[in-house]
Length: 179
Image (cartoon, rainbow, N blue to C red):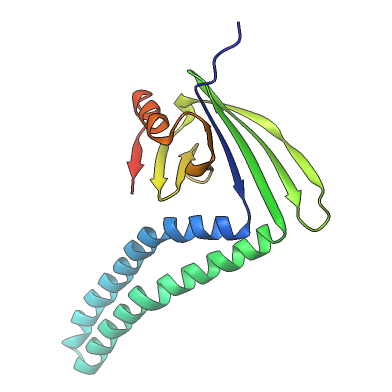
């Protein structure tokens, strides 16, 4: 007997879609690292202030500028440049099917210039393999580990609704973080 598909999703991503997703997902981490940079410089600046007040104040100002302006800007710029290099002229489509005990990901990559498509191998995952799920604006991100995730566009649901899918993940005892 074939298992019943509970939810389906089709997500199409191109260069700008990936950039939008990453922009939303790196805001918080960029702020946290910027704050760490500032606090380190603040501590060093306070220590230097007792030796040389100008150096101490300069260190604090540099920490504020570096942590809250330069670091977030450079992170965003690097991410945008990386997307342009890796996804230029490519559109990927992933098809997700969620069953009671596993989910399946099928995909294809299309070269926009030549119009050639390449099918990607089907991948199966049990829910025990999912580390966490993050909901970021229009996307649901399913993390298999710290460096591998699947991005679902909420607008791509073809069977079921996002709220029920998120509840389903929670029922499976998967940590769900909604931003």
